[in-house]
Length: 234
Image (cartoon, rainbow, N blue to C red; front, side, top):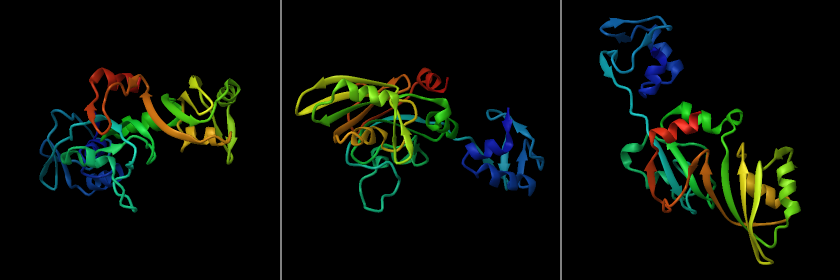
């Protein structure tokens, strides 16, 4: 059983606050009876809910994993006219939104959903859902730099920190580093390297929680399985 205003919000009828107004105005009925009490609870699967006499059905919740390619943005509309990730999805999935963002040049794993609680759990710092990135950097990265990243640095008044940092390869021309982040602040990986005078030439997010990018090709998507969803929410 869930609160009626939450049911209305999940069905896409109105925000919770707007749903509360619909209820107090006497415009919502449950099983044929008008309800005006905000504490009313309904069974999403069996209760018959109407607003202004029209039936309300809960939208099916969708959880999508997309391999975001470089050269597109995560916003629905871009003022510069750049391609968006939403062009890669079926048109009937217009209600989906990205869970966090990857910048224009960053590639890799991106979730999209219409479940607000799922989004909150994956993006709020208190839940510490870890995300892994592989950065290709111009020049040689030495182990002391990675130790500095693990201890944390302050950039523009904000603390940046990698939970883990592993050197995958290194040469005078380029280095490849895997980083594990708990918070994922804006451009955190790039800012870590920029603080040391180094430039990230390619950045790929390879994992969120226990879910890996794997062999999913750039620009392609798949739906998350029930066990995968549960693993992200635990």
